Image (cartoon, rainbow, N blue to C red):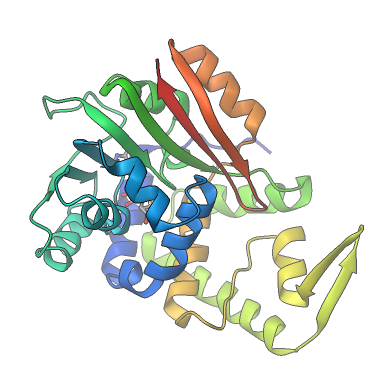
Length: 288
Ligand SMILES: C[S@@+](CC[C@H](N)C(=O)[O-])C[C@H]1O[C@@H](n2cnc3c(N)ncnc32)[C@H](O)[C@@H]1O
């Protein structure tokens, strides 16, 4: 199967639609995503992260969506200038409204694959859950690295390769929807989520396969067949949006790919941390 290359125009239209559908996504998932951020990037808790942020005067969140992470940075370092950018005007409008009490956050529209309009460099850049949505993550990294100060840190994340079966079916679905409307994709994601919920609600627990134990049948299917996310603790529409995101444009990478991108595109950097779990690869690099 020939996979169509990611195109910004698709990423942009799919995300604009998503932010209209779930404008409360950041608020509703804040606690769990902040915890996940602190774990993946190794800060463990807010106290350590506050220490890290203390001398970061200018901070950029690239591809901020509803700017949940900017909110965290701005609240842990009130003296920092936090800049939050995204291509999506819909996301920026909601984020601005929700975070208006944070006077140290500025929002601007920017395609992060293009030269930055803003004339300043940053001490800390975070691009979480974004790079894999851009057509060439290595080049996007290079673009972000070019506006990072010496001794500055860049945190980034990509989705991780799963197994051949799961990646194949995900690609098949993504390929199909690449020239369909956002509504058609949303409707499909809704059906998939109903299926995921039904599997979950069967109550079949502890599925053992290839030396691994999955909490239930839905999670076994999710990790081994195709994207089939459901979490009973989240509102149904948020589960839909998570499946929708995935099917919209979501290539996967591993640590080897990431290191290759770094070698090819950057000079004078040091890998400070690398972290992998079932779903993601996260890395911190420092400009030296
Ligand atoms: C999965 S969301 C993540 C949002 C946020 N970082 C978070 O963790 O909640 C990906 C975001 O990246 C943005 N994005 C994708 N490609 C972009 C680009 N080329 N330039 C700017 N933003 C982009 C999308 O609009 C979307 O808001």
